[in-house]
Amino acid sequence: MLIVTQRQQPDSPTMPVGAEAQIAHKLRSFYLSIESEPVPQQFLDLLEKLDDAERLSELQLEDGDR
Amino acid sequence: MEQATNFKRELLANLPSLRAFAISLVGRHHEADDLVQDTILKAWAKQEQFEMGTNIKAWLFTILRNELYSKLRKRGREVQDSDGLLTESLAQHPAQYGALDMHDFQKALAQLPAEQREAIVLVGASGLSYEEAAEISGCALGTIKSRVNRARQKLQEILKITDEDEFGPDAVSAPLTSRAFVS
Image (cartoon, rainbow over all chains, first blue to last red; front, side, top):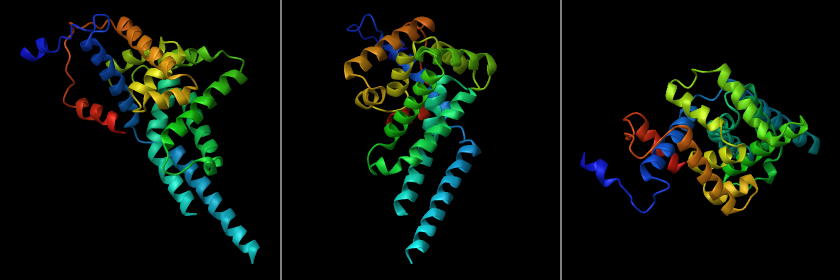
């Protein structure tokens, strides 16, 4: 109960601190709920493919140098 | 070779936030997946331009944001029409955020003008600074600040949140929430 009354901040009447904190909390929870989902396999596969292609082309370049 | 491996690792580590950024902007829509995919391809092709040790997250977010707006322009749609995508995605996937509260929040987010939504997501959720957000959005620092303020006020109106409401982060999300500041 005490904690609730201590939260009052009279210096910002148009943007109440409590309300602002609630928006901030909801926004971060929303974002984090997405961020904490596993990365879809399609993106991991894509990165692997890009990496493999690059390694291959580097190998071919090395061969060409000889 | 070493450089490429580091780059891949950094890119991988930032995929969850890149995806969260995309979904925050356009909703849980195939468009969000396309954006992430295009960003990966673009980033990979431009990796020489990225300086290791600088902020890869801001760099990736910039690519994603520019991809989104150039796509909308190519289609002859107004930039504001990313709102249209959001509305579609809300109709298609009402329950995917697990909690009804999350869905309500995204509905509110979808009602913001695109530039305000982008600003508040960058500053209030992704953990980037006002300066980084201004750079990503290609506008002045003061513009970002006022967009964030307007977005906050509008969200409060839409969600009918006042100071009198009960507030306290619950045990599950509180540790997650504090992590947002660190990343």
